Image 1: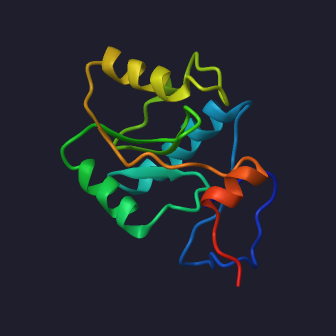
Image 2: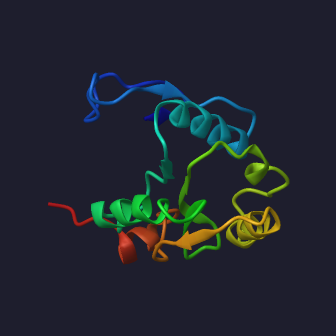
Amino acid sequence: MFYSESINRNDEWREPGFEKYLQEGEGLGERMSHSFEIALRQARAALIVGSDIAQLSARIIEDAFRQLQTHDFVIGPAVDGGYYLLGMKAPTPTLFEGIEWSTPTVFVETVAIIEGMGKTYALAPELSDIDYAEDWERYGWGLE
């Protein structure tokens, strides 16, 4: 688990079952790249997923890991033009360079970098992240 500002030791993701780190880097791209470097020291493949994806399921994650058996990357496009899921088997810092984050072209730019490297990728289903109240009303978790 990678936390943006401080590590919550008492959340649902209990240690030692989950290793916890602070995100490091100047911007989103550097933080994601650093997270992959750490994760891929310990595993043959890793995924980063957004924490605001109400429709994300275990099946999507399992399918993404399966796709990494035959592809270099897996990417889950978000409705807003970004992505909510990215997976890889080797650290690839260039994948995060030169992208203007939080814009409607992030997904297209990322795919172009992958293709420019001559690498393969698989797509996860398109999902929405929750940025605004309208997104919550349309895609959010049910409240009990």
